[in-house]
Image (cartoon, rainbow, N blue to C red):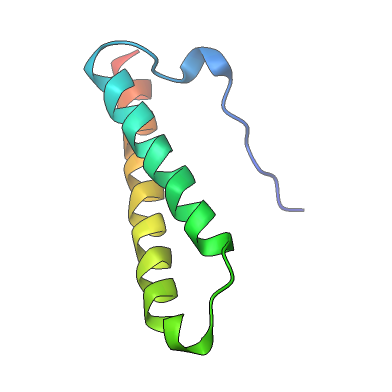
Length: 73
């Protein structure tokens, strides 16, 4: 069984510097996902790979931010 843990809203940083970083990364993630959902032709495989790579980096950064917040609390 594969569980997808949910993040309670109280754990999402919404203020201060970490809140700004969280919001900026989240906005960038949404932009990347929207771009990936657009119809890509065969000539855009390289762009799709670049977007997927960027998405992984943003997700990793969000994970690190959440982990660092858990350590601080």
